[in-house]
Image (cartoon, rainbow, N blue to C red; front, side, top):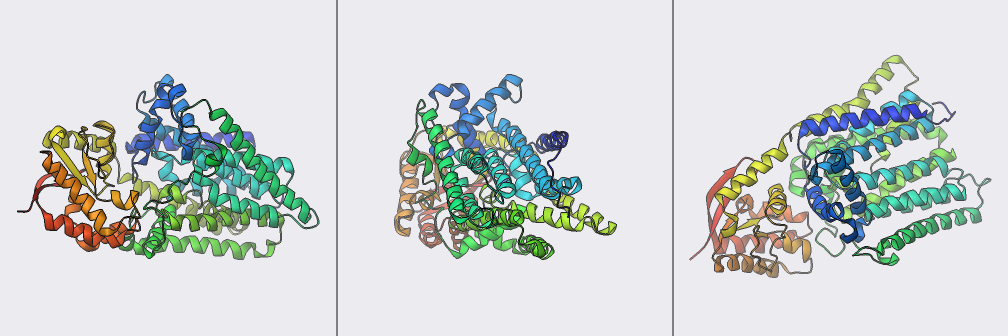
Length: 551
C-alpha cells in the first residue's frame, strides 16, 4: 500500500456521487417499493407533513430535532421540482438516495486519502454501497440516512485527522458529528466514546503530550455543546422546542419494551449483523433469526474473515498513528454501538448501519495491501468487491411492486370489512397496518382507550411495547377488555393471522420486546374467550378471521 496520501480530485468525487445517485434512483424506480422490511418511513413522512405545509407552525421532535425541518424543506423543494408532488413517503426515498450518494462519496474520498489508490477507493466505495442494510436504507423511506451520512463524515475526518489533531480539526469533527446526531439522537452514543478514545490514544506521545490530549478532548466536548446550544437557540421559535439538557438527553426508547437484555436479543443481533452485509432474511424477531441461522452465520463468518485478514496484513504497521486512529474510531464505534444495540433493537437496519462501517474500512485496507500483488489476486478482489451488491439487489428484487400491492390490499380490506363497523385485531407489526393508518385515519391502536375513528384497531404487542412494568396477567386482561369493548359497542371484530400462532410462536415474537413471559397469559385469554372463523384472505394483507365470543 502506498504511504503517499493525497486528496481525491474533485472530478472523481463528482463522478462517484453522480454514478451512485443514478444507480439508486434507478433502483427505486425499478423496485416501486419504499417500505421494504420496515414501514417506519411512512410514519415519519406523516410527521413531516406539517413542516412541508407550514414550517412556522410545525412541532419539533426532541429525538429527531433537525430531521423533520430538514426533510420538510427538501420535500418542498421536490414539490417545486414536480417530483412526486404531495407524496412525501416516496419523496423520502429520493432524498435518502441523495444522502446515500454523499455517503458513497465520503467512503471514496476517505479511502483515497488513506491509501492514495483510485482503484482501492473505487472498489471500497462499491463494497460499502452494496452492503445489505446500506443499500436497503438508500432506497426506502426510513429516516436514518441523512444523520448516518453526516456521522460517517465525522468518522472519516476523525480517522484522518486525529493522529495529528489540532483544535480546529477537533472542533470541526465535533460540529459535524453533532449536526448528525441532532438529526437522529441515538447516533451520539456509538461514536462519542470512540472519538474520545481516538484523541486519547492515537497521536504519537512526542507530538501530543497528555495535557494537550486532555485539552483536545475538552475541545471536542465544548464543540458538541456549543453546536447543540446554537441549534437550541434557533429552535425556540417552534412549538415543541426543548432546553439544551433535553436535546442532549431525550431518553428515546428508554422504559419501553424495546429496552432490556435477554438471550433473544442475541438471535436478533445475529440477524442485524448478518443482514447488514448479506441480506438473507430473519429480519424482525428471534424465531425468524433462528430459522435463518445458517445463512446469517455464513454472513457473519465472512465479516470475521475480512477483519482477521485485515489485521494480519496490517499488523506490522500497527504503531502508525493514523492507522491507530482509524482502528479506534471505527472499531470503537462498533463496540460501543453493539452494546447499545444489544439493549435495544439489534436486528433493526437503522440501528446497525452507523456501527458497521468498519467492514468497508477493513475491506479497503485489505484491498490496499493486496491489489498491487498478482493480477489474479486483483481480479478476485475486484469481483469480491462487487458480489455483495449483486447479491443484495437480488434480495431486494423479491419485494418489487410492494407499494402498489399494499394499496390494492387496503382497498380490498375496505370493501370486505367496512371500517365504520369493524375493529381489527393485529399483532402490531403487520405492514398493512401502516397503510390503514396512513390512508384511513391517523389513529393508534386502542391500548385501553377505545376510539370510533375510521381505523379502529387493537394491537396484541401494545402492552409489551408501552407498558414494560405490567404483569403478564394484567397485559392479557387489558387486551381482553379492549376486544370485549369492541363487541359491546356493536362492532364486528376481525383478527389477523396472529390468531393462528401457537404459544411457542407468540413467545418467540414477544421475545423481541423482552416480554416472552407474557405469551402464555395472552395466548390463553385469546383462545379461552374467543373463537374465530376464516373471513378473508389477501396475498399482501394475509388471512383474516372473524372473532366471536365463546358462550
